[in-house]
Length: 540
Image (cartoon, rainbow, N blue to C red; front, side, top):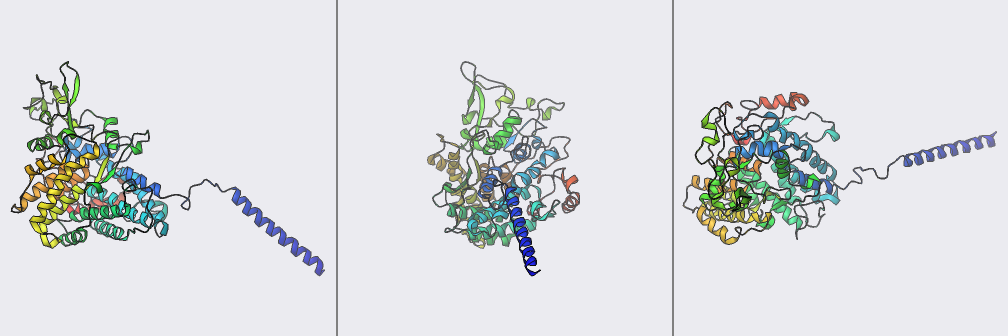
């Protein structure tokens, strides 16, 4: 009996072992060796995606057109239009769907991949620098969104997959900015020259010292974030300015530039051009505000950024970049209508055609030049010139309280900024007017001295910032709201109820159906409600 029992035991054991082996083989057979998982996915690819989509989402009719140019570029009077539908921002019409497009697009095209990048690299030594860059890019993405809307989902955003959070709460902009400053500061300090060199980086991967460039980028971004607080938290702003002095970008060679190529893959193309040309390319003109400023100071950039149609000797249409010929469209007008006050055709200076070959009508107004608006034109997302203007502002504003030597430092940084802003157009190509000699001559026309008043300094510094950020409309508008410079005259088009330039964008209507409770809580925190006239926290 004992022997028989032993035989049964051995047989049972063999069956169990065989069954387990079959189970393992079956599991192995049912595993797709090509399946992409967190274990075999290279997060460097996500970094590329985040950088490419940061200037604008790739969906047709998306934020680069509907929000960036349709609203913000018009608010800040870089551009103007007689079209009240597509370019509603020219007259401050409340196109809530288009204004909310940036919010809608950013959370899918930028927030989701950058949060994923953060999650896939956290606590992984092989991705030490990639994780710090993820933190910096994540902060930059959220800064852009909160600057336009105010309170937004931040701490819970993008965590649907990880934490099953599908209706994230809206965090206060004050809390968001505190975390943005902390994240960028810590991440920049944690970058390690001896650690990994991220291969998915299209900003600085080809630099001789990639990590050094990212440290300068991080500190320059930190400076920009700190200066947003000049109205609401001066001590914090001053502390971060002190921290970054000497560690920001040092020349145009450090500019953060996304180069573009036309490949048939829309993500690699410049979305400003893709969206404007794909939806409507005829109704957008450069504003008389910016054209007049550039002409009055013989700005060498004018022939690079502007062109208009002209007739040659045979009557053929040609593009004309002659600075003296450029004509900006005044904001706030339409073509026709019952009220001649708002009919551009009834205004003095309306193009009627002349012996010099000028086209009549709207064709006689200047457009964004193909140099800076094309599918292959680069995006300048943070530059040395901007950084120098911010340091000049801080020096004029606070002096030694921010670790700077008052007006003398303001003059020095401003001079650096003006000349760099002219020369940074070299990123778009080689142009006869863009050279160091012309940059020096232009600086002499717009300079101020250490004896200048603060108001004069603020005006000149931030007017140059406004010129420097043409094509970066969100940043131009944010800095204008922060400083009030340049002084812009609002349009007063009838029927809008608006007498001031808008101060924020309104949330997308979709939030009322997908995240109503949290949307209502955010709106309750806005003085005046979800309106263009309400202000974000740092714009008190």
